[in-house]
Length: 595
Image (tube, rainbow, N blue to C red; front, side):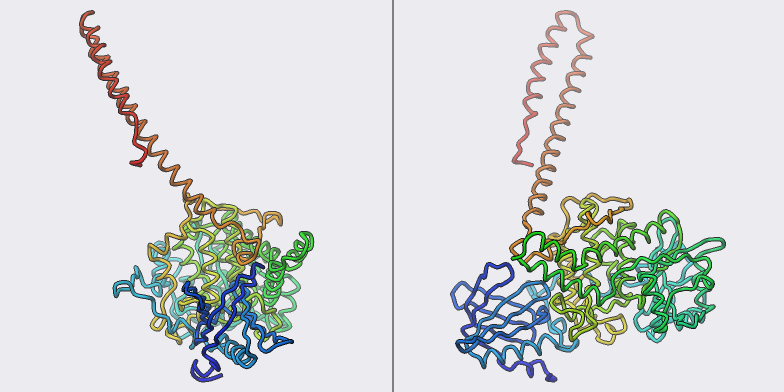
């Protein structure tokens, strides 16, 4: 691969290219010129209709070449991470080959050559509208300021990882128990996979706390670490018990010992009770994702065959397992008022799914737009999820492909949020369209937010200096408006979802968006119009009630005055009051157009 992006482009332009959309079976086509740039494929229509297709190279998952058997040229099949399937017909074999080689190189560019490093937002009137800097909007110190102010006797912010040497996947600042010094934490880190020692990620209003870490390095010999035991027991308090939610099965945890890992021994952590809530491992998730999209793209199977393929993918079962683990975690925090430690193996995938979902269940702030952004920053970006590695490939690459590190872990989290949203539509400030937007940006974006595999890597890449933040873009008022849920009614309580298999829904708006089975996309606009009409009717009703109240008060006032007059005067007063009532009643009509 060339040192410069241009070195990878063997042919910058191909004429007489036919684009065919194979996603939904309609085979919509466009004839034009294909331009291959460093970050986009651009197809411009030969007609005078001004049609153009811009496809970001990183959105391309798989490139397939099919040569014609009877004539020169052939087709390029582009399978995209957003589930589109596009076909480019080229009538020159040489041009076809060069185009395929160019595209294959461009979709595998090194991280430092990705589009966010080159993207500059289009300015309006020579100014770029940005209400805040998304890179600093959710800094750990500001996010934890309330906790540190109200519970400074229990917790402190530690910068022992400022150079990322204690744990290269943790942020520079972490929240730890106040009575535990940094030497104990460093020793605990040496006993945890990848140095991911237990850290605080959420304090529930009842005082119960949620921690996360990686697996302990017990190995087959049953190693112990007194400092790690001391760190965990410090958060319990005298006579209190805690729960360890292990996102692996019992057998997986036992087999991990042979590889140097394992799970906490009961004798070493007697105050902690282990609960195994297995969630599929990254490679299993990748396989399930591959089979899921294969089923969703199958338009020729019978209903029973299609449902069988969907079930055998295991994806909906993975969603159910993740929600179940999150609910158990939330129940321990809410009902047991107990401390909970969540971990799997490395603590950078299923662990983050559980801790972030538990917060969405318990904390109404996490169900707002800004709360969701803060949650993703805190529990995914700062917590060291390997975003760039996990999203190098999408649904069209099985786990045994050339890129074994890819896995749709973040998508699993978004799908679980979709399930919560589906069951509690009024409790979320945002729509499911925002979740779809986050999925797309995680896999292919103009912004640098989801580049890098850790905070240390993002600092090294200087993303905050060289790229723009997705949050800066999303939080612009005119942009944010499109993702606000018109049915939102703030719900301060806990939301307990059903995790029964029948309650888990296929996310049709995402997985079927480019198929012939795509759901109707006008529902949100329809709901918004109904709500606007409802508000208008309530406004009219309020005005009518106020006018009726005023009329009744005037009648009552006139009636009281009439009691002090003689019989003749009383008749006159009644007659006069009647004359005054009629215009009051006439005023009850309201011009609906003014509302």
